[in-house]
Length: 95
Image (cartoon, rainbow, N blue to C red; front, side, top):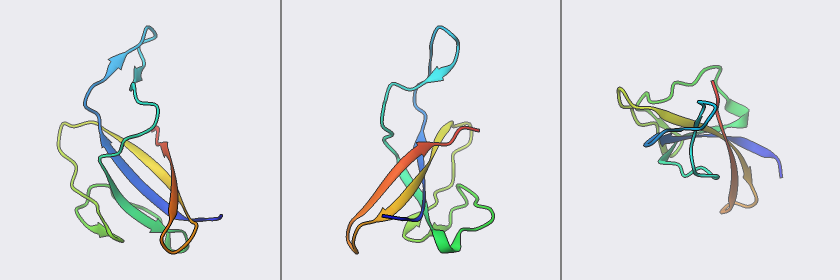
C-alpha cells in the first residue's frame, strides 16, 4: 500500500480542559472528525491550501470556518486497497 494522497480533517473543539501542567488536552484517544474538508491527490499536491475557503475539494466541501471558534485540524494519509476501499490514518496538526 502506498500513499495516494492526503485528507484534511476538521473537528470543532467543544470543551477544553487543563491538566496539572496547564496544557490543553482532549479526552478522545482517536479523532472523531466533524468533516473532511479536502482530499488532495499525491500527484497534484498544491503548494498552499486554504482551509475554510468554501470551495469543493475533490468530493469534499471545504466549509467556511466560524469566527471565534477553535478547531483541531488533522492530516490523513490515504491508501487505496481497491477501487472501493480506502484506509486513512489521521494525525493531529500542531502549529
